[in-house]
Image 1 (cartoon, rainbow, N blue to C red):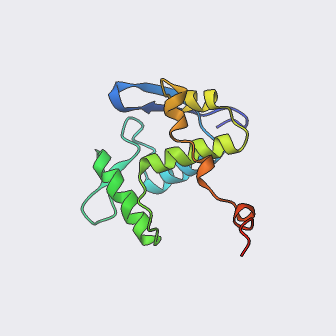
Image 2 (tube, one colour):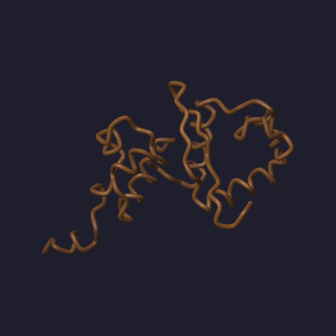
Image 3 (cartoon, rainbow, N blue to C red):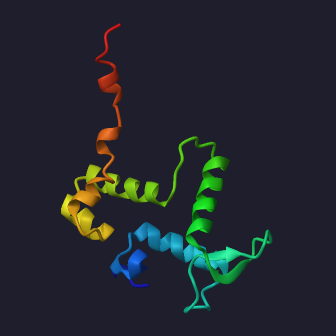
Length: 141
């Protein structure tokens, strides 16, 4: 991979939508490490995220279904002692919120999320959900 050259993600989304956008440099590193660790680099036409063969920790050539992904996320959250129910949309909301919190524009977030309307993107904006310590300290007891 060339330094400075953007790596693009080609996403196949629900409803048959396809979406392309550049990958964050950290994502590129994580994906390269995953592909190497999973030993799937030689299978360029294969699925990136695959099911495991039973409880062997060996990957099959079959793709993970939506319910497999959700169950995996729930197991990992439980292992991390998270009580909040999370799923794929939690990650999407976090990404959009952090992008906006760091000065990003709603219209660009809409394009990245591949939403038809900025109103839909706004549903994922969690910037106003956090109460800061400064606000709590305003309570005089």
